[in-house]
Length: 258
Image (cartoon, rainbow, N blue to C red; front, side, top):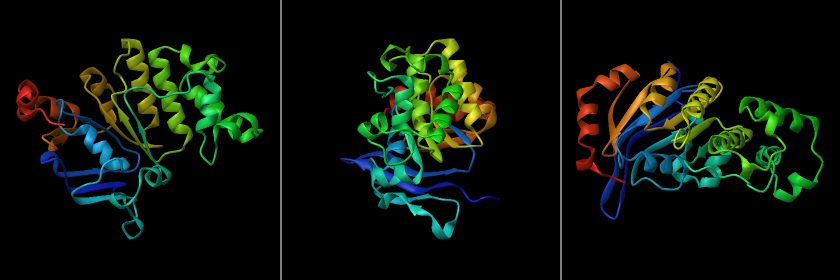
């Protein structure tokens, strides 16, 4: 049995006495695509905040690395340090350089010390060009490489930001509601893209669209969060038919949490 890449054990986080995360246990293995669902306020965003250093746990274990003897304590690291370790996060609203071209957005995101001036005015090598071409093919924006990014559709902006995240060569991708606001066609293409990344990267995807969850969960497990802890885990069909999950979703107004 391989060692988890992410280990979360007995983690708790409260805000002014409000328990957002409670006794959370979660394990992500190398190459896994895990989908996380739960009613609004179940603790999903706080979970991502803890993994990226935006929030610090009140207690518990947050470790990154497959070697127990050389794992990293995420609770002791800054957001910058965690990002450099290889944990990248994509928020629901795309963040791109709207006035730069698609190609320039990817160039600015390549891994390494690279400011805007250096990226745009210093010479780039063949390896940089090849990497950007590969990313453009992956996110299917090769024919729009010279477009100003602000002119892209909502779905295309999401794909571009995902490409920008991949340009940093993360080991773990944390992706928050990627299908929000997309057309059905864009949603399906986004699912295909995420499925193609599984194995090469480890992914945690927060999502509410159950059709999309069914699409991407065929290669992994679904974790259901409720009141800041894991309610159940399993294959999509198992989770969907679980009476506890049905009760939580039908009665979610009673359990609003951060």
